[in-house]
Length: 84
Image (cartoon, rainbow, N blue to C red; front, side, top):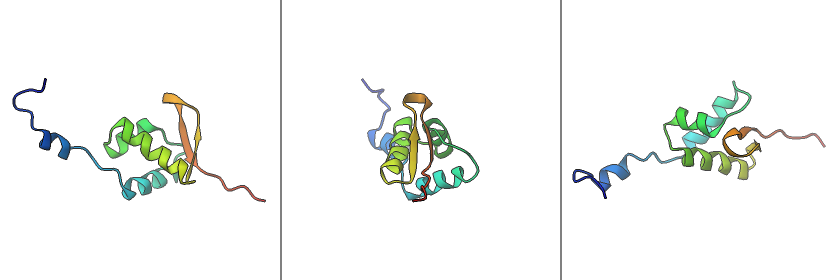
């Protein structure tokens, strides 16, 4: 049960929407760091762990990042283009 002073609209408005600026932020971060984790993205952008994981996995699905590992230890790096 929610506290009497709880306001659903107030609570929902505090959730940060993940957008293109977060993708840009990940790319900027990776210009000076070898990898990023969901925990780092969570702290950088003040978003939830689920949001940071979704953001990074979307970037993997888009071909921007590559994923190394599973669970809390997962690292994300800029995808390297191999020479053919």
